Image 1 (cartoon, helix red, strand yellow):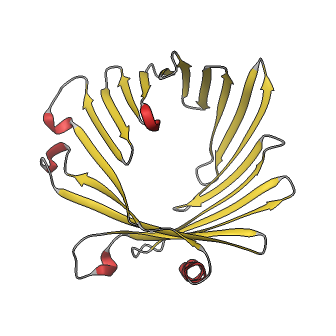
Image 2 (image 1 turned 90 degrees about the vertical axis):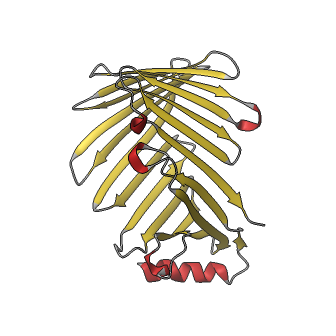
Length: 264
């Protein structure tokens, strides 16, 4: 499988494909727990290319960690390939991702979408686990109702997600044999959205998303008797902090900072 993905990469690289410039995601490591105040940078480079042939759209790409080392083959890296096409009213796609870290893990995803029927089907295989899910939507009760049953073939676990969207309110119910969760999202102003949720086990959470200029946002999530987290998205920057609400210790505070760099 790795040979097939590598071959697709080669075809795309030397054709008249749309080749993107490499990008680098940079994370700050060690800003949590007992790992110390700052351990270092963790940059990851990604590259992709695309082309159209025989009525299909082909995409491929690769990611790799960037670290100073003499053993380049030891760096975590992956390659992926994706094919998209149209068959009647159905949009079909298939994607494969291969890990080149010695594990030889390969994951697959096959999806089919029909906008006219408001229906989609997805089959996923990853890490020895296979799952299938169907999403069906229809208009009812003055809004849109969606039904999303999911089934894990490996573990025989099944659950369903029920959704209802109308105007500025959406309701989501996630239900399995062992647990259930109810979430209600309400757009209270043009820039503010509140989402309370509660589980069958009594866990309560409240998320407040504040939209900023340029598509940026700050999301604050409070989980009762558990934790408080804040995520700030500002263009290529993403910063997140999470702290417990009780038994506070500095080792329990988690801070993550992410920056995407584009090379032109």
